[in-house]
Image (cartoon, rainbow, N blue to C red; front, side):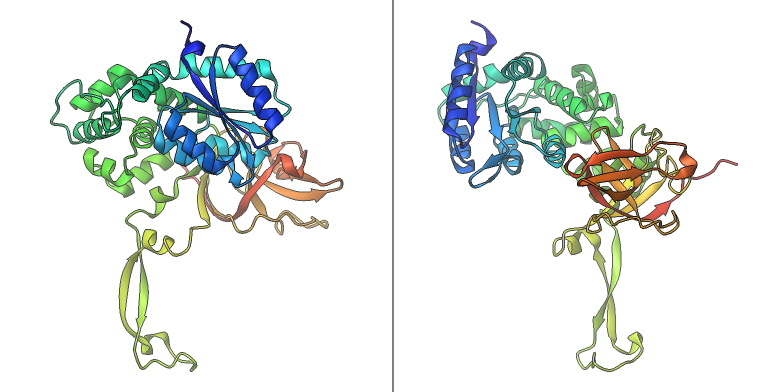
Amino acid sequence: MSRSEEAKVLVVDDEPLVRSTLAEALRMWGYCTVEAATLVETLAMVERERPDAVLLDVRLPDGSGITLLDELRKRSSQLIIIITGHLTHKDAFEAGVRHAYGYVTKPIDQTKLRSMLDEALKSVRPDSVSTNRQERRQPSGETKRGRPQRQTAAPLGNLILTALKLLGLSYKDIVAESELLAKLNNNPDMRVGKSTLGNIISGSIRQPGTAKLDSLRIILNLSRADMDVAIGLQPERRFAKQLEMSRARTREIPIDAVTRHRTIRLPIVSDDAKLEHTQFLEGLVKRWANVEVEYLSAFYQPHLSYVMVGDEDTNASPVAPPGSRLLVNKLLNKVQPAENASFHERELFYVLTPKSFTCVYAELAPGDKIMLVPHPASGNLREEFYSNEVTIIGQVVGVLYPARND
């Protein structure tokens, strides 16, 4: 029996004709099919039917299919999710960040869809179909657990083995998931081979590379703080290590790598303080308190991001040359007309284009277009896109220049 004949695919689309057409095509290819029309129905079908793959429409009556990706991944770490629909560039970006396998735009190219689905089930997750079928056959409460393949005294190894047992994952599962992450992030260093995983668990590799640690953290739902403690790496050292890594492309640095265990001082105002009067701050303060930045972010989601300019991104040179660290305010994402403003007066933006992320100037152009304007000293050419083809993520509000060796 072929892999496609073993697999079950959930088709999610609110248009009955589209849904039935896709389901019929899948059955012709040898797949079993089930259907859903809303986010609520999707969650119920995934829980009851345990499909091997989901074709998830991006626009549904009760919300965006992309918002469901995290929840689906929690329920099944091996579930293959392919997004369908009329995607904007922002949708495609979000789908990649939330670890969808891929996306197919409407009208759906059935040849492309079949190829993507076959490849996903065959190469990316080689054990997913058989594992899901075993889970469907087992009674509730008797889910097969992954068994550690060796004992270890290494703190990181114990952390990984505990997570493997709790999640019911095997070494092969980790390898398959890490290959997917490496593909989605265009970073081959994120792949964790079976022998490498064994050496990490045994303690032979005491401090794995940052990319491999990130893969293990994502796959095993571990916190970065726990992993830092396990390998004896303080958050400040880890952040410095991330900044020193050579990156070909411009990318955002995770917010928790910057804020974790960092505190700011907040004033505790005296009970009898009269805030309506003008006076020295010292006269109002009863005491000062140190508060972690992460605690404050629970009240207000951080809108500041930290970005590293990649080696290949020279659009903002010499203002923000490769290797620069940028502070980006995501609330400031509106492009204004240039009106012959000099480059000393223009806003610099962090932008997602059809090609990659970049740090560049931007201005409105006729015909609902946005012109990306490199700094004149960079030697790069201007590029024009329709507004729905690019995402202005935020304005650069701070630049830390790379250290010079001379």
